[in-house]
Amino acid sequence: MLGFCCDFGYVLTLLLSGLFVIQLVSPLMLFGIFYRPGSAKTHHYTFVIKEATYARLCNHTKTILTVNGLYPGPTVSARKGDIVYVQVINKGNKNITIHWHGVNQPRDPWSDGPEYITQCPILSGANFTQRIQFTEEEGTLWWHAHTEFDRATVHGAIVIYPKFGTSSPFPKTHKEFTLILGEWWNANITDVYDNAMQSGCDFQISDANTINGQPGDFAPCSANDTFKVQVEQGKRYLFRVINSAMRTEFFFAIAGHNVTVVGSDASYTKPYVNEYIMITPGQTFDLL
Ligand SMILES: [Cu+2]
Image (cartoon, rainbow, N blue to C red):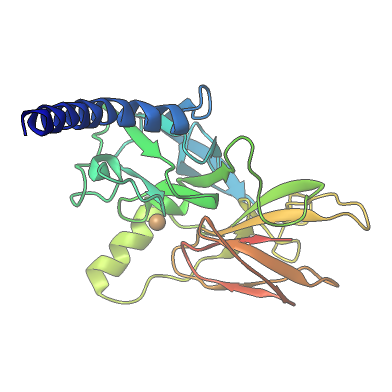
């Protein structure tokens, strides 16, 4: 009996100490399994919001709000699992926010962009650093201003590559291109917004549709500046198509070719072959 008691106590002590060791070790083990040095990176970008002069459609020169003077704005690129810090310096003439369209931002919605919903706008003359974590997203998204109609010119692509050691579930491509579909107004975009708000009528229709900020070659005075890509016959290309338009749904096709949809809104899809895609504002498609 005594022996049994001792044995039992001994076993219990062993068990308890074992549990303690397991409790102590398991987080370390998990840490060891999932932590790969250098696998996730931190990136830093600086977005200076400022006015810049652009001319489209037969010298309709106007001042537009931009990031770093660029229209469309700079591409943010990272790998899945990475964290990006964007310091937004507002040198524009109005308050603004930047939104990371389609990024989940788990437990960190406070710099997601929608003005007066997840954050106050960044005042003219102020700056604010926003953190974007790519936890689930892989493929193509975009960022844009989230104040009034500012996103008409304040927008750019987000490209999220697979983690190191993993690859996209579609055949390798020779090269990739980002195509941001958008709209150009000859009028000041703030006036377009204010007129619609004051009258209660629909927004004035844009003067041109654009690809990477350029109207098509059939638009007036635009043939020389049309966005062009060079491709070689027989090679496979990835096109990241983003609809940054304020109000227009687009049909997009490549003459003489079918397109294969392999992703949408930073998620891979079952490959789908068609002659064209229909893309709504805010949406992205990855096409082969
Ligand atoms: Cu959006």
